[in-house]
Length: 388
Ligand code: TGC
Ligand code: FAD
Image (cartoon, rainbow, N blue to C red):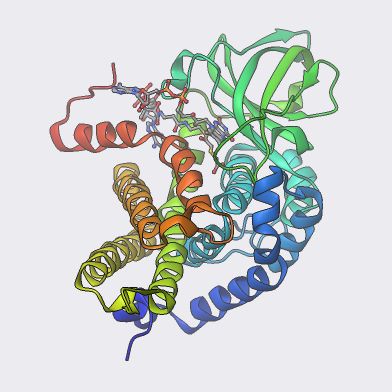
């Protein structure tokens, strides 16, 4: 008899033994070390990134799908499953891991020089060094091609000026991967955050992703050696290739938040007596639970399909958009519906549901808004780019 929505779909039947074992290890770690603290971190809008990162490094989830340089080199599907567990805890935690592994580390692994890889990747995989990824600017979020941050050659090196906005892990990072306009087009730079002229004030008063550090990056005459630039890549292909990786993690991750909401609502409905009967015994409640389980399971089947495509080297960016759009859109709908099942209790931090719902507002926006992903899918279907 299936006890959970994903058991109803027999999802484990589609996973290898190693994938199930890895998933269970990540889940147990989070249950023991993270979940007991989440409500407090969320309420106080803090997260002990410096303590968590080495533990996550030991767990093997930082840059886990990358090869070499101290990274675990797992399949993409295994990485997705880890993201699902991380986001079932909190989207902020998955963000920490996404930005470290899929954005900062992937950028260095894919586009960095041998020296940059050897200097940074082993320490980042171990959680000893934290990375962030600066693409978005105050006036250029969905349209990063317009960025104003500029890198100008200065003798053998570079000088960077500009401002990046909404940067996860910015204030706690040891290095920032910064994308800037140059005479040769957009280029990426590895910026040690103790370089004079670099500062990263934290953005406060967030109502979403509170258990995550979000910052501005200010670059004022930041002087870097020639070796700080990624040697080969020019243009938006550089940053967008990294976004493919992080978006893939969200395809799975958002479903984790939805699963946690649904598990919570199911348990609550079974225990809450209303008009002398459990809430779970009413047809209206069961219709909600059935519809949400269906969307969660369908999302999971799509995520696994995309994971297998990625492992076969056949996943295209517009397919990642299908998954990101679907997972986040359905997860947010599930979180809100679950909140109704919990009634007033649903608005508190006693239960994770409203925390997930609020977090998912950020997830809907970052890594390409839903509208951007609709437009990416629209372009793939029609051959017409309707972004501008
Ligand atoms: P477009 O003309 O389409 O492309 C420019 C160049 O880039 C190439 N390209 C890609 N390469 C790899 N992967 C992709 N997905 C790619 N999409 C495009 C393309 O082939 C072209 O190459 P070339 O050689 O011809 O120059 O570019 P566009 O300016 O029209 O923009 C397209 C659009 C709107 C889809 C793109 O700008 C976009 O995706 N915008 C959304 C920006 C975004 O997602 N930002 C996210 C910032 S990071 C973040 O949010 C982290 S949150 C982290 C967390 O906490 O989890
Ligand atoms: P805008 O681009 O101004 O969009 C506003 C609205 O316009 C949206 O609804 C959008 O979909 C819509 N829109 C845009 N273009 C079109 C169009 N062509 N047609 C119709 N509608 C359109 N960025 C980083 O670089 N690194 C990070 O680590 C990072 N972390 C983040 C963490 C958090 C918590 C948040 C909230 C954001 C983070 N971001 C990060 C920034 C994120 O990627 C951007 O917020 C996102 O890309 C959207 O940009 P914007 O906020 O400027 O919105």
